[in-house]
Image (cartoon, rainbow, N blue to C red):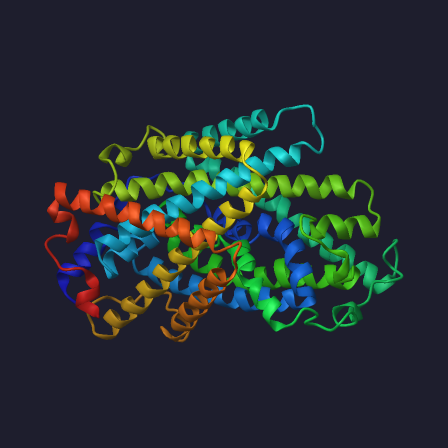
Length: 479
């Protein structure tokens, strides 16, 4: 370990970033929990059940194990050097400036397009109660409210996200408890047909074949997007050394309960053949059980999930633009903090792009929602790959004695990271194989070309951007 590298790590650490450390343990924990529960579960699972049947439970468990590997790799990096730029900063350090630049902007894109879909979806959910209100008006109102929340303070963001997550968690736990009651005591309209045997009684556990089950992995991975958001909060957590490991280590039970547990109960209560694309499995199950106002309750929960995702998106895009600005990879004006210690301009610009998405989703066909989510998945996979590769290179540097060891080492060293890398590349192959989903790879190719041109322009204006402090990119040093 060289003294210059320690100084660099200390100099770029979270305490000097200028943010307010306003996120307490309670809020970070709930942000982590909420990040594992999204619209991908509440709505997307319906289409995937129709494709894979009960085997979807196994797909969520498999993907959940990979996500845990990713988060433990990120956790080790965060405790080595907790910074708000998170994965973009680690990509910059271990793979070189271009990868930090590409990762930061791609993660920004992921959240912008996700918010485009989520804000439009939120307006559609409000139609359930107020069909006379134009959707663009509802979407605009939600956008302005969340924009204001994120401008005021990180504490208000954290508090709103805490309650959003609380609603989602309560709804899923309630569904599990009620479902177990139906299975155990046989009450309600679904009591006569509810049985554990529903998991294999209708053409087996893999009714459409293993291949069809594997094809759902791209949708399953979309459902897990945002679990990495806890990494973006590192620079604003009150005590990251304690809160971040706890939030990451509780991920397995969150996945087991909220995804595997809830789907298992639902598919025991309602046979898988009852589900279809566009139908929430939670709405279907509540309807079969006969709970009064069940559809309205679930619609409110799904609305909350969409607003939670949009809220997180506004938070993360502003921080990522500031990190890019401080690295010379975005206009310098984005580096300024407001009087409330928030990156106000970055949040504002991101919000304006999200408004463009609201307009686009209003005028294009419904299939556009699927395209937007597939682009978000591809951008998310890139982010996860950068976390894993950075972790592998970090571990190599630690073994060589060039960097200090983290206080939160990932189990198995870099072996689990390699397993996750192979898995993510496999999912990318599935996306390329799917004629509907592969459009996102074309979009990402265009995005990569645009970023490549932007990088060449940046290099022309500032040749020093290709090295940090005159050093060569970290990949050459540890590779």
